[in-house]
Image (cartoon, rainbow, N blue to C red; front, top):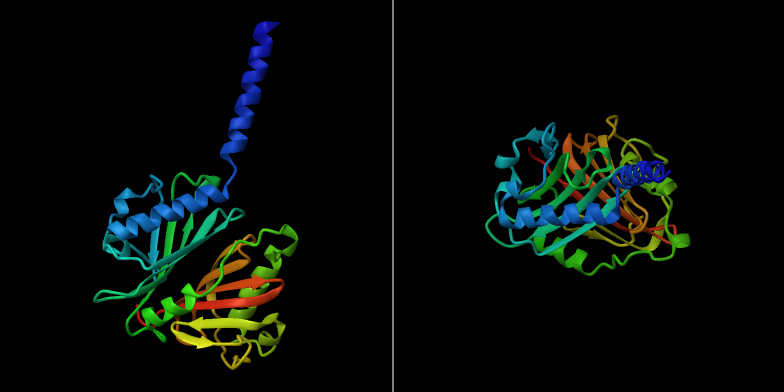
Length: 265
């Protein structure tokens, strides 16, 4: 009887262990994002826990060698911020380096296979620098440092995943769909930072269609706790440019919009 009970508890423990291992946690995602920032600061991608097989590094929508990419050069990071998507087991990190001979504003999505945040399956980076759309890292830094990205602690106040995705898609659809801009719940004090170009309120001077080319190749990180969605894409409406659009929704209204757009690859 004792041996039978021991076997039963061993099976239960095994099931619990497997269930726990299958959970993609916010803490795990943010820890991996922090390790990415540490690797970028040191310029040592070898410090990252990359999956042994089928790892992918993509920079400005092109699959690249991580040892020859942005991560192989150390940068002094003036500001960084990360969000987490436990459904897709992915994170989004924005960082700014405003000093030195080559400043950068970067948006990176990190993805994990099988809900296992202990290893990284993909690093997907959009990296803008001097000469890119409205680029001025010091101005961008000033605008974004002034923003409030406190967590939305009340579950009832958080935007739904569905709303966040609709807002992200609606924004990118404005160039092809004349009705898209009016479908977005703009806040009265919404701030839009496109490169270093600042607009307040966000709902001013928006496109209402006109392009025949949709902005495609969309990859999402949706974080209800921070009320944000980031979409990496190809901004084909203007020129097949690598692009990141991050949007934050507070109390059901768009509060912040950030764009990182690379005009050359």
